[in-house]
Image 1 (spheres, rainbow, N blue to C red):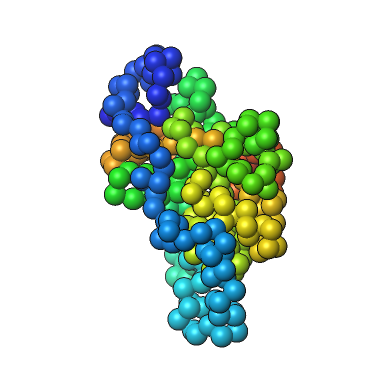
Image 2 (image 1 turned 90 degrees about the vertical axis):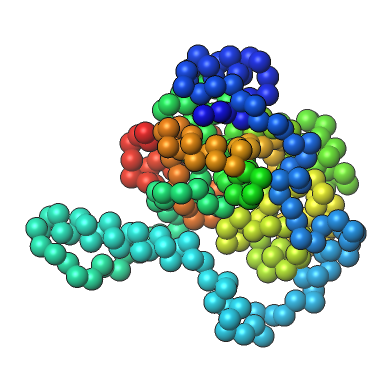
Length: 297
């Protein structure tokens, strides 16, 4: 199995020492993340024009029943099913009887549960097999895409303790709107991108791609429109989180790493990502706690 994360010789050497079964990667780093993740409406439209689409969208009261069904959060529905199955198993174990109907179990505002296959919007949780690999030890990766080129994601619990202005990252802040926002380390592959949370205004802009309900991502190509939306009070500046770098895998590589035990895969509620919380260093422990596990193997 080949790894794609490390672009420098020092990282490759450290990976060989800690994980002997993984060979140095031959992953060809794309020039931009846009070659792996494509936006439907970014390109020829100006940032001002693209932000106007939200004003022409129908109000919630005018949506038909089909659209309301599409708005339903299927991840929360699945989480309730998982919680019910777990409660059912617990009841059967304690009473030694078969229960026909899974009980209705509330899942709370924050929830995390294991899933078998990686999917868009899931979490990759570094296991103890990555201990000693500094760049990925105790990381939590949010998977942005599972497209045909290969999965892409960002590390969401590595704050850099510096702002965009201090890092002089002009690609992510052309107009200065986000200059005071903290910059997170998203991964070893070069590209700037951001997450944004919001309601109808963000969704109906047509600029950002939805990761999970109420949470979206954008690249440097859409940061101009993001700035315009802040100026128009469509979304607040604190609803953004900016990342320097990202993670990428070849098409079947991530599944191989999961089978080898380097990542645990989980679904989560949007507020687990918590863009308003700028200090996400303890996120790995929080996710493990929400999964009800002391260790991830």
